[in-house]
Length: 122
Image (cartoon, rainbow, N blue to C red; front, side, top):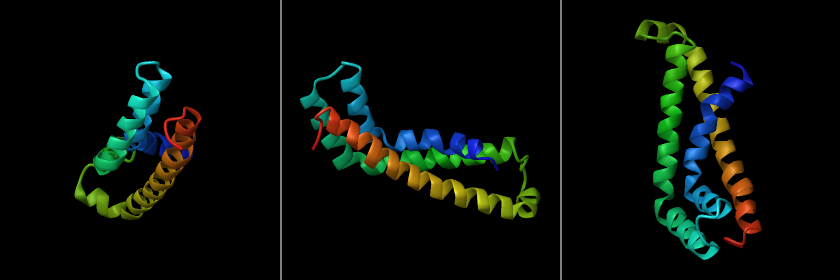
């Protein structure tokens, strides 16, 4: 499995899981909302709904993994899955680790410091 394929699988779920804090930043950058509204929206979304966004990210990661196994690896039935179980387990492990590390880096470094730069939070 190539690094580019791993990024294709994990990229969108990382963005979707980070939308609790990314959406207020995007609203301010697009000029749609004020900083005070975006700050209160970020507090609400991250404080009360962060697990919903994380769950959506995990769900989309599973969907993208199933799609990858179905289309690229041609694993369509249980006998093929048993024969290629090492490929499946290694891919799930690699994408899971990269998904978690990517989520932590993107949300707590990129989005956080962009929000600090925009004075959304301190």
